[in-house]
Length: 303
Image (cartoon, rainbow, N blue to C red; front, side, top):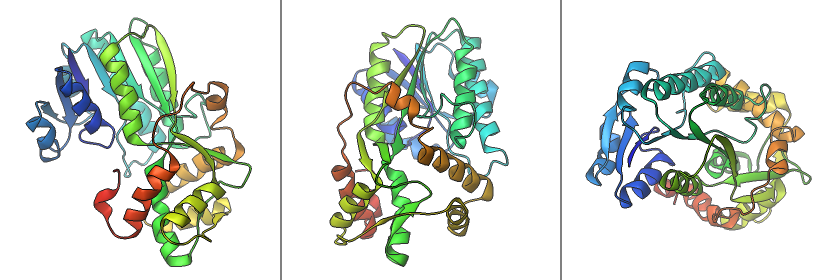
């Protein structure tokens, strides 16, 4: 099969492309930097260098594809982050329609069932909507949970003030988490089988734990068994993110997303459509990575 993968050599797209290549497929990987794709090219992939903001480039690259994997790359410089994410979804939809592509596996997020109030995931809701307007295309919409690597933002906080936390948490809140490699596994399964019809949604999670449990597991992994998770006010969380270097637009979106996590609104759809099985990477597994990063071994980020 001819499969087009967006996301370059990212933490999901790279292992996904490797799995597809291992099964003998023709794999085209879209990225902005040819050097970042050299390892995949050495394994047999074809690199398509360009921007997902360029509809003509996408249309040319999607030509003849049996299926495409779509994801919206990060853009920390967007003045309207939600709007930018939505536009990329529209770009994909236009290129898919122009080529008559029949199968799409799209990376979205938990909370994308909600039209407003979930930060950048609001943009993913709009991107989903653009794709779902393609009535003659089979679309598997993946809605993974909170990415484990997002928790690495706590490393500096632990080192500086001895706590971890943000504006969600508490003993009554279960955080649904997932590892990027587990998402890649699910995406590969869907792309290799192509047995989905119409428009469908699949939720993906690896573990479900309270923030107190997260702090305890990570604390034990880094030799700080008394580590606590502190729930910040929305104002303090926003200030902290901006002080850490995030652009205000991005920080405000994360603040909003975290508010929806705290209220339970963002994960309500997940709990209503709970996956039959969770993926393999548990919190204790990722704690080893967290400890490696905490101890200065940044190369271990996603291993």
